[in-house]
Image: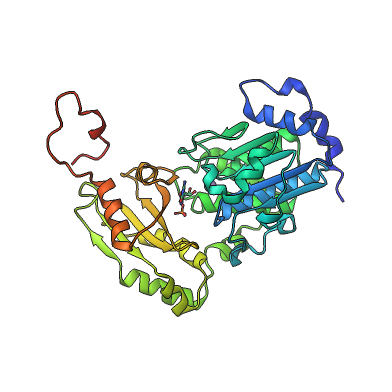
Length: 366
Ligand code: 5GP
Ligand code: MN
């Protein structure tokens, strides 16, 4: 058992740190005032990725280090930790969403909207305090205190800032969780969100014991052979539309539930496929349509740099970032592709009446 809380608590509870314009300081002060036996519920978005799980579990372990004895973490159904994340420390914090009770303090991680928290939105809404840790530009602001930094490469970075403010030392377990979040959302430090702060944090995390090679092997360089065969099918049926996205090109493909069944694969193996489609240098935009658990479609969009797919996803009811975004859709696959194409290249139609031209002038030059 660690007694890190004793050293950390005085800093966290120091009201002088709680500048009204500094949400991280306000969050730390709020946590510092809580009883250590208060119920704390952490939640992350449905179908959690490495940043959702890594930031949530890393933060949960940090709260434990501070002495909090009733920390629970969860994510919406399907409540199944994807195989690549089953090595993560802190999985013992997890409880099924049906067992999540209204806490004294709720925190959500990497969820750009309450909808992404599914059935966990209700207990968080009932909590007296709900801290929102996120980095999606599309986050409209919800909860009782918003720690949303759209310039942060990962929610793990936001979580690390708050842990630092709370005075939590990163041990190997916390560092491993946060590193998983950081490396997932920066594409292994390749995306333009990879700032000096990202590398500085990565250095600290590796210094604290996070194993970069093991994490990379598990997250990015391992898949069942059946998933490779599935990838071959998905790539084999992909289509290139050079004229789409204002002539910058679109590469698109899909996987059906029967494709997963044929190769005996779980849906999470599809998550990395859109980034492989995105390597097609003839297309600025990549789109992959995947089966969602409820018979709907989960659509992933990527841009190589010139197209704001985040606004496309938002317009279609989803969210995300400028170069990586997604939304959930109904209907059939051709209909989903048509909706994406229409958003990338809005039909010009008749010339709008004078004074009605504002919204039609988007970033895409037709
Ligand atoms: P991915 O394509 O890897 O699933 O998601 C890329 C980005 O888009 C992530 O930041 C993710 O949170 C966001 N995203 C994906 N699907 C949805 C969705 O259905 N709704 C919202 N709001 N965001 C999504
Ligand atoms: Mn994220």
